Length: 297
Image (cartoon, rainbow, N blue to C red):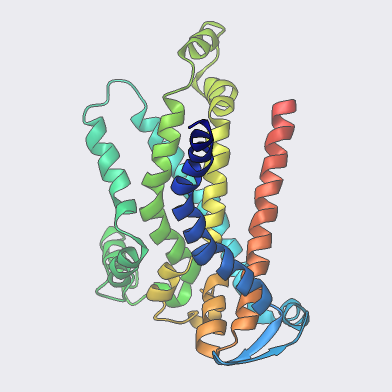
């Protein structure tokens, strides 16, 4: 009897963990290992492969298209960090003020765009950026009293700015929720003490609010960086399955897709994917190091 209990106590956990272990091994670990092996091969369609060792990575270092895609992605990431996140924090600060009526409605309004998905956002912003009939050109033409040229082509002249604007509409409310939750946990006693000491609104924000919301802010920054480097659907649909004029809208993931599924070289595409993964891992480790350094100080 005691032996059966010991047996069941050892087997029972594996019964519950087993489905996850099997699914993780089949759909995550095995494809991951296969992609690592593929990164050292050159493929000619799905059936023909040739071992090339580190040549894929050597070619990648000298590939101008990869560096252009990486630069475009970095530009989009900087737009997310220095435009999208300040807007999200500003919205959170406004909604966190006491006495605001309809707070729940405002939260839903700002958060709702993040529920629709990137393909819908791309389809929605396509007509907005159109020449003459587009909402953006028509609005600017009306606001400037006819001085703005309604024939201005946003997706030809300001490709990355257009992508940043579309992403801003979708993700500002999503990040606002994180900042709002962090602001609501800021110690009221600290704010009151700072007010008694004569601190103005800016000083309270700088010396009390920012240190209090720093952990959540770091998480939101990391989430934005990873999401920006993984951008694919938005640019793919808005630019009609291409990298845009002179590949100014080409991102790393889009270049990976073009290399693997249009050109057929899955090996080189895997090498691009692993370089991207290592880059994101390095960014995550750097942020972790900076956070630890800040906490130690």
